[in-house]
Image (cartoon, rainbow, N blue to C red):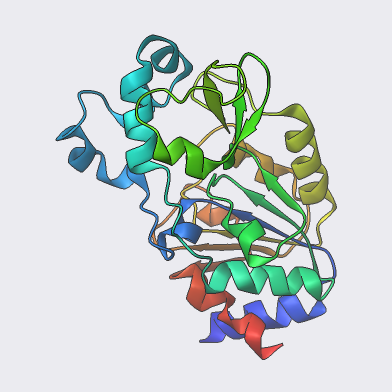
Length: 241
């Protein structure tokens, strides 16, 4: 309780907050973190998720890539949770300047957040590799096998960053700038084990680094306020502002 009171106090007095989040933000919306349950997936798939979600695998095993992608990454019925809505409220209040997320589910936008740096892309953006026509996630979900472009018949690829692919430099630069200018950085729902994304928090130079995660991370010792628990519960303090 004392730590939540501290979190509330810091949020109250801060005017340039940035939130950096990962899979743990969306698990409370029913979207599983595949890294923690590799064993389950390996019962159905011949390869680990990191292999399937690589550029090499995408190029060489289209059918199996899209089967896994639809089965494990397209949770189109998922709704934003209390954490998503709390961050959107902080932005509306003028306190939160940006959300930097490793998630691809689009739930921050769905909750009403406006400034969101999606480091790893979004399942809601899908483009034909031949003509560039945009397609919805619902279309990708509805077809079998590699999805053909409705315009030219080419292959439609989700705008998500696969292993072996580089991050979008404009998004990365925007995220780093926001973090470097923040007077408070809240990190939530991430093990901080995915690089290079997790290294961006090192650009924060303030004295209100809050780390909220259910399990310990390698950055715990750097936190000015460490909360081991639910991100939804912790950000519940926003309702009291």
